[in-house]
Length: 159
Image (cartoon, rainbow, N blue to C red):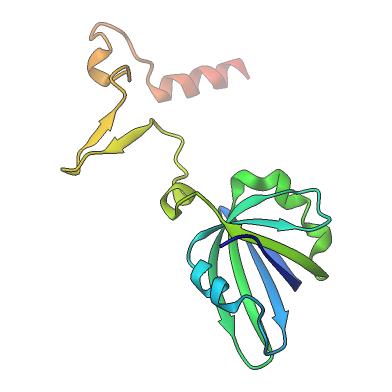
């Protein structure tokens, strides 16, 4: 499926814990590209709002809801796109042209938000990390590690 263009009402943008929720309404009982949209629901898509400086960004196409008066499209955008999302606020409440297309990103990649070490999962379910990754066994026993309480006490003395 290629790029789909829809004229929608940008109903609202709402900040949640770690994501922004975008809600769009397609008015009327006829939904252009309805079959393609149903297939895209539940996956990651690339969104773009025409005439916005935000450019393209990835979002989870959370769900599509239809009733007799409108179709509601809900998207979740992760916090790592904050600078782009801020540029969308002036468009909320307006009729806009929404461009969307399938993304190459998977749901797992989209939801993987940890900043820890990089790893992969082996077939047997064990984790494989970079062999150059420092482990606790690499730290010499004679090395003194400061205790958190000592650090706090020292900070109090400095202030």
